[in-house]
Image 1 (cartoon, rainbow, N blue to C red):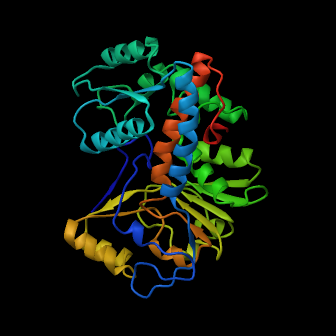
Image 2: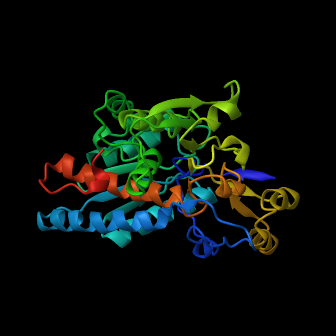
Length: 352
């Protein structure tokens, strides 16, 4: 059995921590799997997140000097355990950076009309600069109507049609956090973008489509692949950069990847079947031991063996996940600055 982690506002919305991430090795050394050669450069999302937080700290201090404390409101409907985990990680990030945070927890029985009232109140609050509505919402609630009701100036998830339209027009304002985080990984890791052949695997509104647009604006040549793409493996194999965001555990095997390509794994899937875990992690015995201890293991959309084919590779966990939350924090600070008209130097993570 496997479970896709879509409890957040994107398929990579959570920042996961794993005891194995600390055992990643630099090129030329060995991976934590016994005797396995680590060919790829590991793109460490935790380290890049920390860089962004350090930059945001200066901007937050400038805002504080102007009497402004950016505030993020999270709306968590019902008792979804995964959603609680995601929201708690976002609230914790606010506390770490000194941002104000507000948690609103309506019951699962709330109607669309009642939730629209909650969003409307947050839109009017001057101490709230950013609003996120945690997905999924109960089936009775019209999620699209709720997301569209968020003030675009406070839409720190970057989902509102106005913000999406600005991205399409090349005038990005508040951009979806996961694609924005991927761009930070690529740029801060000095991955060449201009003229690169990039393949985005997945066409969702929250990852695939904005990801493709950001890469186009960075002058990459972009192909978007999906379930109907013909010759998928050959199409992906021609890419210099592959962004995998399909929600299919370990689907992208080494045969998909051109040697030396950069592979960004957006997927986060929980494996609970022992045979599947042992098949996927056959070359990573410590992962199998972890599965046996916990009864589950996290894997991305990219098979872990790709680490020996790719030139650069984001791990799961510890790759894209930390950047999703970092960009949520960046968007909140940016929204505070723009909405309040406060003149403060923009953090580099906010320039897009």
